[in-house]
Length: 119
Figure 1 (cartoon, rainbow, N blue to C red):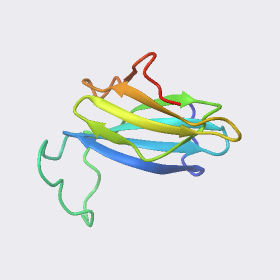
Figure 2 (cartoon, rainbow, N blue to C red):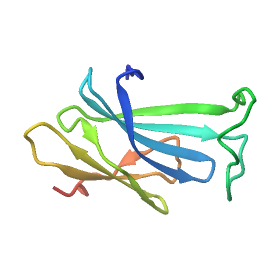
Figure 3 (cartoon, rainbow, N blue to C red):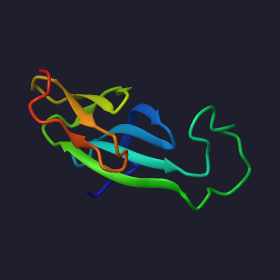
Figure 4 (tube, rainbow, N blue to C red):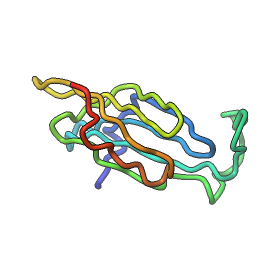
């Protein structure tokens, strides 16, 4: 999907090993996004280090997947991760909110668990 990073804002973040999940809502395109970044230059467990590094971004780190979750429920909230299960709350204008569940055993290929959404 096309992403307008200037108008997209992060709502939630969760770490799974060397991967980072971010939820964000795009106000110009009205779509809820799930971003998956990889941090191959960092440790799988423990702190990733300071956020005040005076170095260039390692080539192996960066965005690896953007998933468009919903257009009507275009505003995701904070996300939660338990093992291989990622919970993403979604909100929209004048519609009932939902919590969607994604299977993230392979963090680069998150798949929605059909029939598991909570309204």
